[in-house]
Length: 147
Image (cartoon, rainbow, N blue to C red; front, side):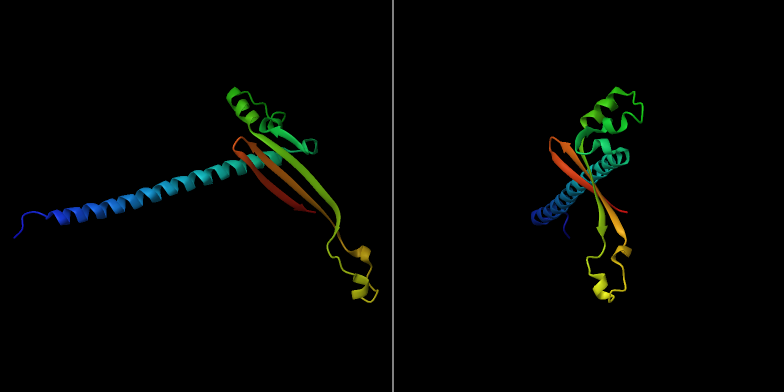
């Protein structure tokens, strides 16, 4: 009967344990990066929402900070928050395409002249574009409204 493990058995068990630990560490690092990326996306979505909810036609084609969008509506007294809001820069664009016909067909030809083209509904299509301006780069978000 043996009283101890052989050197080969110890080396094999240490190598198996090291492979398992290495796999766990790499998956943990990947999960950490993914978590940070998702967190950044949610923060950016919130910032874009602030811009879109508080924008007006006067901000069209202009670069503004989050403070410009919120400053008049809310009385912000915290200096640290004011500085943070002023450092978050965005470019806002609002473009409206009015009177778009849904169908580009010759309705009179299809209905043997019994249908009036003016009966087709008109649509207004509005696009809002928000561009986040950061030293690392920029990110763009769009909203589309069909009226």
